[in-house]
Image (tube, rainbow, N blue to C red):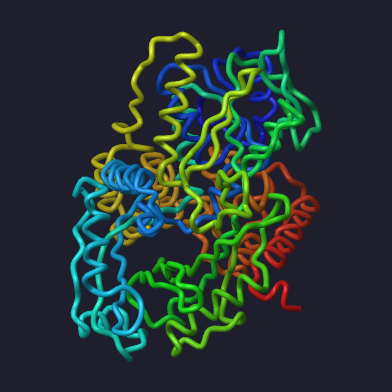
Length: 549
């Protein structure tokens, strides 16, 4: 599929292709798991279709801690197999997809009277690095008290004896998911968002496809496929009940809440991992570009999976944990620039006998009597491996020669060398924009060539609109090539160029209304309605004070 057709205006043509085509597999769910299966299957020559009920990565895959990590705390709970797999996947992506997955140092402060001792932490770190086959980006090292305070001047110095430095990685989770979908499209797959599966179709008791509804036009479309894969994440049980109404639930929801602070309000220069003084849970305060991302909570959630929101109790717990760990911060809800919550779909049939913290993050596959394959559980870091195992199974079911997956060898959106050459080329063309060029190639891969060309035309005054800013080229690219259907899609999950500030997001949207509206095929009234809806989402879903009023 040509990415030039991957936009809202071409949706009727895509639905026609889905309706009339014959597919080897239909994947329900456009999070990182479904996207990874879609890409892997397309790379192996299977005809793959992917449908998503809302927007790509709009669920768990855009609401994570933004970490690609081995799971240091899994060692404590004895989940060595998950740690082993996660460490190897982290190291693979750091080498293969370094534009998206960036290794960063994590500091664990060591205190005399609480937390792990230096010796115990040393054993844990050697175990962690052995899990990766000693192939982590860099090995851990211990710091003196002075070195620790220089890197993290806001730490409480009382009882501090030093620190331990180790490496994990961070990622823009929704961008990673979208880039995975786009790579599957380039390999011949067909994908669409805002197309919820409303029923499964069967012949002689075997699942042969699904009927989806176009959320905008309201029309229903039947899609035929030899195999149907349920990769719906937190909605996996919902799809399982379309197949068998009496299916017992397998998924348990654990809610994780995160708070975002302005970098100037947190006296740190590095990402810090620490045990919460409240309940000893491992927490991260992660250094981003102009802010710190802090979390996370981990509590069973009894409500349905729609629209997780930061609750007053979650926010209070995080603020108390941060203030007891770093009293000088004196954090309160008014300091929080942005908040978000997400559900982890964990495999747990009895929540009364387990806690979210101790429940395994291992993935689980179920094949129903009708042939519906449900892939559940797992984590962001291991999605590629989950997809590999799932497609292996599908090829055996289809009685095809099992071609080995190549996702462990192929970068997303260009090789590291191609990315470096692109940055160099456009930085020479316009040295004044070299930092922005680097950002564009890290975000869009080799697709950034087209964006850079337009960015430089705008910067050098060759664009017909005198009001145009370089950022306009990104907006136009996303709307034309990344299936942006609403203002929320653009501002929440495509616009990596916007800060975590709610006010700045809305300000940019209104400033660019004359550009964004036409690209989305929206009238002025429809655009204003979408802006109003997004304002409500920001107020209800992304405010630390939302439930305090």
